Length: 103
Image (tube, rainbow, N blue to C red; front, side):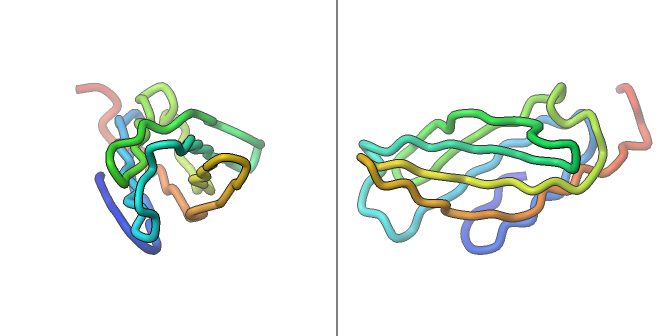
């Protein structure tokens, strides 16, 4: 489920590990940056975590325990460099009910 650039609607299934990579095109370096990732559903915040930074990309992993509930969620990547905070992307995370519960 690695995707990059522009609009990033993410589709997954319940109980999946989701690796999300956001490539930041318009910054020279993310060396001093702090990346944040959050997912929110109808009932409020579901996940809020720090991103790993690799060159010019923000990386975050949603664990199976964080993807158990099917539904349509809003996610956001934010970045902080010094005192400047920018929202890089806000889009949808769709978690579909998996038919197979256990493998």
